[in-house]
Amino acid sequence: MSAWYCLLPLIGSLSAACQAPGPPDVPARYGLAQTTENREIIERAIVLVNEVLPRDMPLRLRPTWPQSGFYPTLYFEEKRNTAFAMEDVIDREFDNGWRFRNADEIPVFIVDATSLGQVETAFVPEGARTIFISGRNLERQFDTFYLRGEKAWEQYSSFEKSLVTAVILLHELGHVHFDDAGSYGHSARLALEDLTKPSSTIANKEVRADRFASEIISDAWNADEMKGRFSGAMGRSSIASNLYRVVAIASNTNDLVEDPTGAFDKVEKLGLFRASGYSHLNLYLRLLVILYQLEPTDERLKLLQRIDQAFAHASASGPH
Ligand SMILES: [Zn+2]
Figure 1: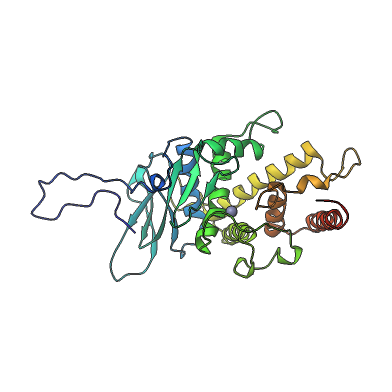
Figure 2: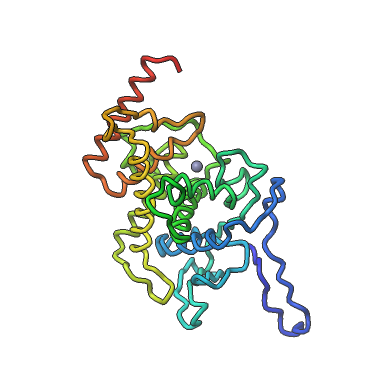
């Protein structure tokens, strides 16, 4: 809980220049450089995450750069002998936003992707309660979520890119919440019996972090807040429905493009849901699980059962 920005000078030393020191350069400790790639999109995602979280949850994302002013402003303050509180700031016109008192602040740093592996878009580094996100690798995620490119239904806006980024940040926040050391857990397996369990009872770190994200979205969805309390705020439930929408866009477009169930050519290709050499489940399987958790339809459950059976059959019979 550090004071990153300028503190008011004490009375008597008003002449002292107030130099904002900025946040400590945590990425440098890991040999990573900071960048500004996709900063506005990430900033908006941070604002969306902070609005969609339950109002009584102290865990909050904090940007490590001065906010652009395009989105609601996030104010952080510490006050002794008081509990965590989230308050609406509605008397500052263009700078309206939220004030978080005594938050459990999780700084978000945008880092240079070039020294990272191919797969890492965001992660919680070992030994620091912070989130590193690769501004450049996010670009690849926008393709994977079919927000743009030849296979996309339409070319989506920067708002959808922020929503996808918010889903990624919610997953990472799940790792922070459960104190997962390092970035990855053991190999994830699709365990149907775990799908609707509360996140706190799930052992696999990656499945648990996804479940944390879907719980936050469900909770916000059920909060019945379709409108923000001031201009620029969206309302928790409408953010939740938009987060659902980008997950559904990715999952549905993938169905159409890859046809894993053989709806078009009658050839089932459930192997497409297999992950290769990565501790997370295949992205589209994860998205299908999240959709099922948010809206448990029979159709989704049946597909998950078919995938589960196909995997069980493949690992029992084939060399692997
Ligand atoms: Zn993870």
